[in-house]
Amino acid sequence: MKISFASAASGDAIAVPAYADAILSDAAKALDDATGGALTRAIKASRFDGGAGETLEITAPSGVEATRIVLLGLGKPGDVTASTVEKASASLAKALLTSGAETLSITVDGDDGETAARAAMGAHLAAYRFDKYRTKLSDSKKPSLKAIEVVSGDVDAAKAAWASWGPVAEGTQLARDLVMEVPNVLGPEEYARRCKTLTELGIEVEVLGEKEMTKLGMGALLGVGQGSVQESQLVVMKWNGGNQGDKPICFVGKGVTFDTGGISLKPGAGMDEMKGDMGGSAAVVGLMAALAGRKAKANVVGIVGLVENMPDGNAQRPGDVVTSMSGQTIEILNTDAEGRLVLADALWYAQKEFDPEFIIDLATLTGAILISLGQEHAGIFSNNDELAGRLFDAGKASDETVWRLPLGPEYDRQIDSPVADMKNLGEGRNAGSITAAQFLQRFVNEKPWVHIDIAGVGMNGKSKDPRQPLFGTGFGVRLLDRLVRDHYEG
Ligand code: BES
Ligand code: MN
Ligand code: ZN
Image 1 (cartoon, rainbow, N blue to C red):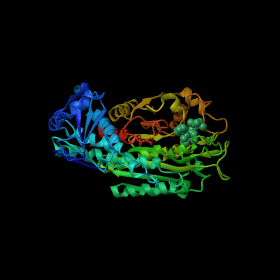
Image 2 (image 1 turned 30 degrees about the vertical axis):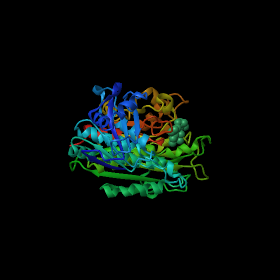
Image 3 (image 1 turned 90 degrees about the horizontal axis):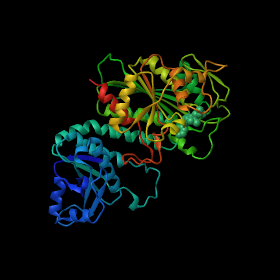
Image 4 (image 1 turned 135 degrees about the vertical axis):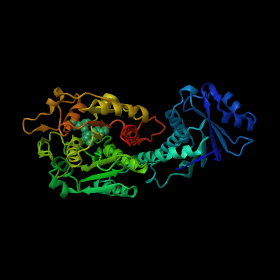
């Protein structure tokens, strides 16, 4: 989607704000006058109320060049925030995406560059499509909208704000593309190749294959991938936008490109969704692209563990014991609890290699987090109240919300094993997300750390948020960008 900023509207479709009780903005009033009262008449003839995100379309109005005028509801004027505008603008773009209109001008009230940029952000996020495998989509179902222009009282301020938000939208779309991509195409090797393309943004990318990981002793990660014909990969991405010598902040992602469950095979129904079991890693890759794209003043390391979990003659068995890079041994009781095994070695590597200021991991780790929180919040687990609090606030600010769940020795005890240092399962299904987090914590050394379980929010086939497509949401990019923006730059 082409995004631009202008001081006057020139699109096929022109959107102007209206407020609660269908109060017209100045821009809307001007159009109402120009069209001989078409807007007022349309409001009378409809149930449009100016509520946040409501739209009302007036097609082929007389007296103006535009082929349609759209009233965009923003709710009560006093309640309008950047987030309201972003969301409303997303609803608008969704409504017009396949309407026939090719260009859309969105007028935002006032001259606040931030608001204008967030309007662009909402529309950009909402216009996302994953159509690459649809060769027979009829013309009438293809997106018609090609360009979005945001009309603002201060075009320069809007452009400056977009320089910082545009890359976050792009990074989110990249994460979505990775989650949506099909599993016969996006195996660990192809995924690593795609990560390599981030060098274009000034990111250093290093790929470790099985040989290097064997040398490092990553028996936990390698065990998960050993049933796959594809080679497991660990990709390390570095963005050095901060002061030389400052400790980096570090993000680690689970990248299981397909999770069959392995020998503890999952049931067939819905298994296709497990192509999205790399959503945590996709968020890390998208975040790195966003931070580099907006030249964030921070040193950031992103690490993704890429494996395919397959049943095979060479696959690991329930009962196997593997030795992780940390030296700790793990009894594998269920080969479907594989994400924690991948993260165990990736987390250890991150700390040993980079001694980061903090470490945050993201993973589609447990079905149990859906039982706890549904698809409205990601679950977070932390050893550090300050970092967890900052992440909570970043969630509120970005509309990618998180909710903290507890950790504690009484849960940790559940993963003790009589055979090895630990087992990869808790006792029974209860508190499954917490026992998974306890497992990860055994690979964290006194570093501020947050684990984000995005099994519910990273893939969402029922999302009602107009900024999100169905399935691959790209969750985590905007959340973590916000965290970095608010606390770890300059
Ligand atoms: N990738 C799954 C978790 C998952 C489930 C993500 C549903 C998205 C939707 C993970 O690897 C898994 O299989 N977890 C098991 C753990 C269990 C065996 C302890 C689960 O949640 O059932
Ligand atoms: Mn699994
Ligand atoms: Zn998994």
